[in-house]
Image (cartoon, rainbow, N blue to C red; front, side, top):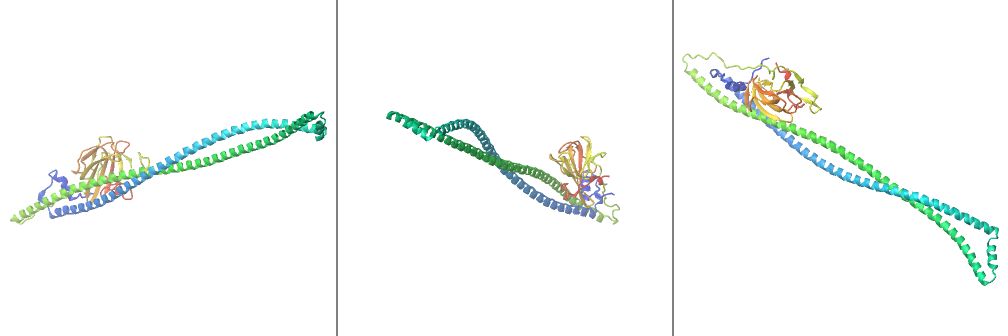
Length: 438
């Protein structure tokens, strides 16, 4: 199906070639220009609204990024604090382990002391048993009395009494020492065991605290990972908004250029219409011109490069660079670096560069059958047109390259019904360009 290119764009192109026939201007042509101007004014209002919306989104995103970074700083501080507590706890656990090792050495030494004391007690018990047996065999206390009263004189009596007292005191001391050492042994053993139990309980508490701190750090690190992912998403979204702002500015510049040309053409057409009316009034025969105004037509969108080898179709796909599932708002056409790129439709061209995505690219704004279309040509190595330049369908506008985010030489080609507003659904107006190319 043939499509009628708007009068505005046709005149814009033909003015530069000298092909326009000013002798066949009709009022309908002036009305067409006025209609185009009104349409472009509406387009400009829509662009301004979109710019305001994008500016608001970008401001909100920057605020979220700032909040995200603040949260990251807080989490980093928390992690540092917890990590410091964890190191202190580990140090305390190490001290407790050293103390337990020391206590185990004390217990080990105590066991040796206990063995020595047991042997000593065993010897004393044997000695006491022998004394008791001797006392029983010799009459017990009566034997001591016989020893005392068997003295030959008073001096001998004193000596014998002292000897008996000494023996009895020794027996008593043996008994008391035996009891005291047994008690000391029991107390020391209980003290060391209590000490070890207290240390182990303290160590267990520290181990529990260590586990809690490790859990807190793991939780904070997980939160930090989430915040970093969120920050990356926000930064990417901010970049896409910045690119959208740039695209909207280009479209506005193209509209301003087209409106300026349209105003000039309207004035020229009005002047030519006056001159034509004057010539007709002066004609004696009163005849009218037999020819009519021009009908400027153009075909469907043409292939932007010679031959089409599609490496990535329009629609959802796994992104070759990021590896993430995303929407591909155009088609990738494989071609060697330097291959000429042709304007798929006539219109006003705008050039630009976005390193994060499109690289060197050209936007061509066209109005066909009263409908606005925008074609985009990305990853160019260089341009063949300038900003605001009017181009005809088939004109070379640039050359295939590797600029922007790409994995190989190709042309990324998009077609939008209306102005460029991004290519991510559901708000995108991008369509599959293959369906429009003849």
